[in-house]
Image 1 (tube, helix red, strand yellow):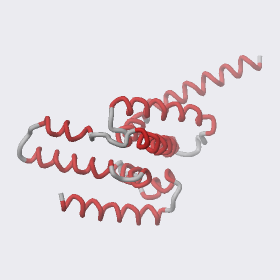
Image 2 (image 1 turned 90 degrees about the horizontal axis):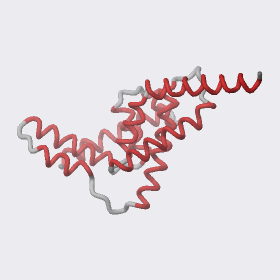
Image 3 (image 1 turned 90 degrees about the vertical axis):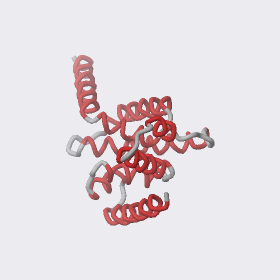
Image 4 (image 1 turned 180 degrees about the horizontal axis):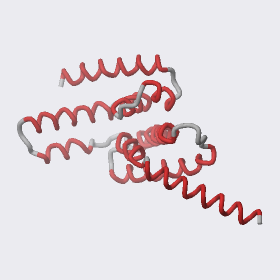
Length: 175
């Protein structure tokens, strides 16, 4: 009887995990897209995030927000992935340059596309923590949520985001 109960618990746990993962899958894709340039790397990172989420799921506290827990794990995996890939790929070409040059649009859309391309380039140059901060900020997370996800104080979040905004204004103004 005990094995049958464990099998049902395992099946329930698996179903619950897959439902939560499906409901919040955009988080995984946002993080993977922000931390990897090449489609193969994005696919690898997405898979690694999902694997680490599954491994950590038994420790998930259902009293807390799943999306916050998911962001924390996904960002930690992505930062580790970024460190490892930077060592492997010291000379890579940004994907965005070819993509935006192929658009060939003029007028307002071309200017907006150029600003987006510059923002992507700016984000790609950030270290892991600042990239995570900006990603969460752009995803309209509150300072409290960002602090909880990253394990830093709200004051630290506010200070770092203020500095990032200033760097963006400076970098984008000079481009």
